[in-house]
Image (tube, rainbow, N blue to C red; front, side, top):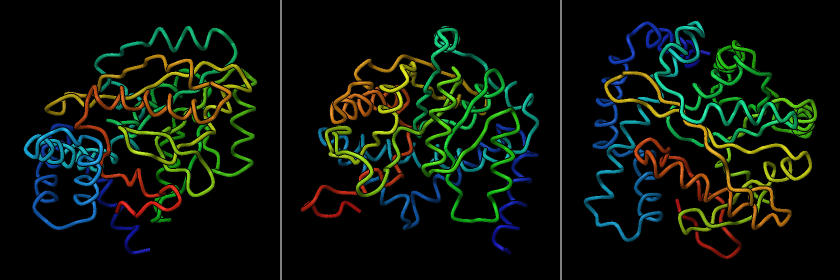
Length: 293
């Protein structure tokens, strides 16, 4: 209760600050995270080392530093993205690349699966899309349960519908696509033991979801990748929408998972500092493999 109270208070404070100030604080917090021993730094270093083995130590260190700064910005800007009026947040969208692809896909009438990786300000992608079309997405409550109502209101305030990560939630996704609507999925989450297939992600076996591909195969929905690039100096956001490879809807789930990971890689390489390298992407290992973290 007390932790949730102070977390809410902090988010409301961040929401009142101009975005450039918030991002400057993010840079400062990122520098603190770089210098202090913490799990986020350890995981980011491990992931960068695994995913970019041919890079020299200096280049990897530069990416880790930039990643920690961008991760801190993402955490601090959440207050504004969840609590400010939708119109104020969307006014920060300075450019949209590929918006016509999303419109054309919706016009097909078979639904759209928007795969939004842990890249940039993915909350902005959800607000932008849900204001324009009916959108359903899976929702996993945060570890700090007292924040759940705030987060739900923030994500649903433009019209999105959040559903639980269970059988009922999956049915809701199928139903939304059958109505020709939009669904949003984070494609690079570890789905947990016995809930995915292993496919290479930056050359490393990663437990990869099959839900997205199964949805695409069964419904014929178009799959697009989407992310919001964080512009420098708190200038706002640049939204990107691009086609996913057709093989993400392959009936062979291993092939589909490999294609999905490749699509996420291609997005991450466009703005590598803004990918969430601090996420334990390789937590679940193939049988017999040693732990990564």
